[in-house]
Structure formats: structure tokens, C-alpha cells
Image 1 (cartoon, rainbow, N blue to C red):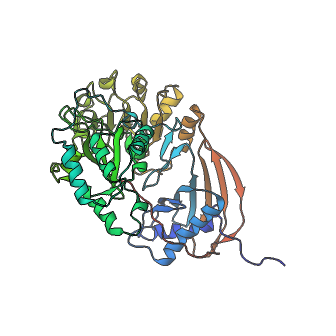
Image 2: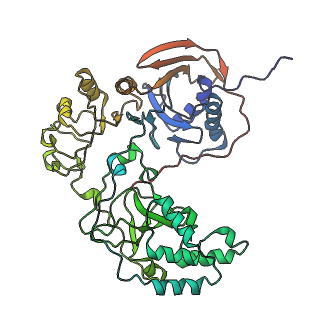
Image 3: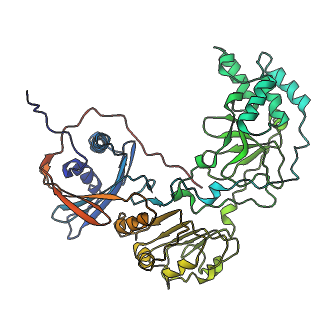
Length: 497
């Protein structure tokens, strides 16, 4: 028996993309004028980023989900795409496939960040806490009062044994502060100890205002888990002022989490800042990427509701370590030059291009981002010997590549585009950079068709690596064969201050 059903839509067929392209063009009232229109977006198996006005209708959502199903069948996690639509409807659709060496852009079209060194992290996410030899527990620590208060509030709780506490210390590689040991001697906070007594769970959580983790579940804050993507973090800095109670870190082996509200983490701090106390209580905000907020000087203070009211110091990026030059920042590179400078970003600027001579030789400069056309001489970058992240336009990268002057200290890089350029412009340059580090290259496919009222379109597929295309003529396909509609998906966008 011959299967008469139409073939399932392929992500490499123009007809599969046609409904989404029409969706993106719907808000462009000038499409019939004598000009081409460019649209762009990103669609993954678990979300999408599309410039769509208002809430999607069911047919519009179906169009996106049709592509998601096609990606799933092809075993592809995510694609970025741009399409240029001419006034007569002729359309060239460029699709860039996900790549293990490319960190996809968040919430916008574009190539994303090229991760040149596998597994690398920005410097602030690699930084370990500074030792503070004079740090001691707060004077408010009162072990007897703490234990008495806990036993009054949790009279039926089952406490941990000394052997269980010692096992937790061995697993974590730290000595737990005495106050935390008192807490777990009163309650080991295991759910199985409470059975169906949900009020007992509420009483345990009420002790500190957060769900207390079981002793076996204590963990330290891992910096890599706090928004460590290069795109978001390369221009961030970890700063600890001399009067700080908490070190401005992404994570620390001495931040021992013992409570949570499902997002934020409550921890004892064994690596305090210059003006902090050993064992102080801090809150690690899940919406922040660096640092933590001092909640109480001690666990005793927290249990007795003597908490701090002042918020966390957020002045780190206002210090000279992070500088922005351009129309919305400093007016010269010289004004940004400082021995402690770590990050230099050159933004929108309508004046003469900048020279990088003032920042040559700065010992801590690790990140440079420069909008296309803002550098007088890109070859000056070769004299910046400590760069780990560099973002430039395609022309600036071309100068460095042709001169063999791409800094080999880089761990990650990005190819920026002008606002009026195709956001995927620069694939060839990106592939040359990836090749220098022996990383997998970017593959793109070009699909050509016509956005006409008919339900079918002739498809031509072009796959290329390093800008050398290979053409394959496809068949006429219909954009049909939708399967059951899956549940709506959204793209999670981490918030970075």
C-alpha cells in the first residue's frame, strides 16, 4: 500500500518558512514600495525570538511551531535566519544552524559569540575569593540563645548526628560554622522526617524565612551557574570595594547555601569582604550575576529577626574598571585609560574614529568591544596583550586577519554588524576566526523562493562553509502537514543588571 500522505515539512524547504516570513512582513506597511525589506529572527526547539507586534494568533503560532517540529525531526536545536524580500516578492532566506562553538545570541538575531576556547569563562567568573586574614565571626553570635530559640520553635524536629555533620563537611571541603552546626543539630531538615505533616515543613521554613535544605543537600555557589554566557558577561567586572562586607564575586566555595525560595539562595559566607564577618548570612539573587546581599551579621541575628535593611552595593560597574566611550559615555579613550581598566566598550559615535594608543599596555584590560567604523587603526589591537574577548565589525576583523594580527590570547569573540546590515553578515569572517582555533565552522543554508499568494514555491537550497556555497535544487513543496499543536513555548531571557 502506497502512503498517500503529503511529506512532512522540512526545515530546508522555503515553503515551510513562508508563513513565518509573511508573519514578520505583516507589520511593514511599506513592503510594496520600490525597496527590499529585511526580516530576521531566531527559532529553537524550545522557544523563539521574533519581531512580532502584539500577541500571536493561533495560526501565527502554528506557523512557528511547524518550524519547531521540523527542527526536532532534523535533530537541530536552533537556527538564526534573515530574509531579504524584494518588491516583486523574490526572497532569499539565509538560515544559520546551531554550532557547538557558537553561543547563540539571546533575544535577538545575530551570529552570537564565537567560543574559541572550549569551556572557557570570562575572568570574573574564574576569580576566586581574596583571603581576609582578619575576618572573625560577628559579636552577635550566641550559640546558646540560637539553640534555645530553635528548639522552642521546632520541638519535634529530628536533628543530625555529629557523623552526618562531619560527612557534609568532608563532601563540601569546608568546616561549617558553629551556628550552622547548631541549626542542623536541631533539625536535619529532611522531608521524609516530616511525613504528611506539612505544617512542620512550614515551621522549619519559618525559622529563617526560606526553605531549609537538608544537610545532605548543602552546596556552594558555583560561578559558572550564574549567567556566565560570554555575551552577557564579557563586559562585566567583579569589584570588591575596601569597605565591602561581601566580596563582589560570581561565586565562592565559601558561600554555602542552606536555604532557598526556589530561585534566590540563602548562604553562610565563609569568605567575607574586607568589612564582613565569617559566617555572615548573604542572599544570592537569581536575577543578579555578580555579588550577593548582606542579610544578617550572623545566623543568630537572622533567627532573632535582626536583619540588615540596607541593600547591596551596586556601584561596581561605575568604577573605572568598566568604561564606555562614545556619544552616550566618555568622549575620549584617554578619559577611560586607567591602570585598573578591565573593559572598554566603544559605542555609537559620529566623530572621528578613536585611537587605542591611550590604553596600550594597561595590565588588566581583557575586553574590547567596538562598533563598526569607530577605530582609526584596528592594528593597534595587536598591542593589547591581555585581551580575552574582542568584538569588532567584519571590516575590522578583516584587517586583523589579513595582517595575521588576531590576538591569540582570546577565549571568545564576536562579529558585530551595523544596525542597517544583515545581522548574519560576517559568517565568512567568523569561520576564519573559528578555523584559527580549530573549532567547528558555521554552516548556513540559503533558500530562495517567492512570497506570492500561491501555496507552493520553488526552493533552491545552498549550504556553505566559509562563504563557499554548494547549490542543491529542491522540489516544489507545500507548506502543509501540520501535526498536533504542542504547548506554547517561550524563550527565557536572563536578566543582567
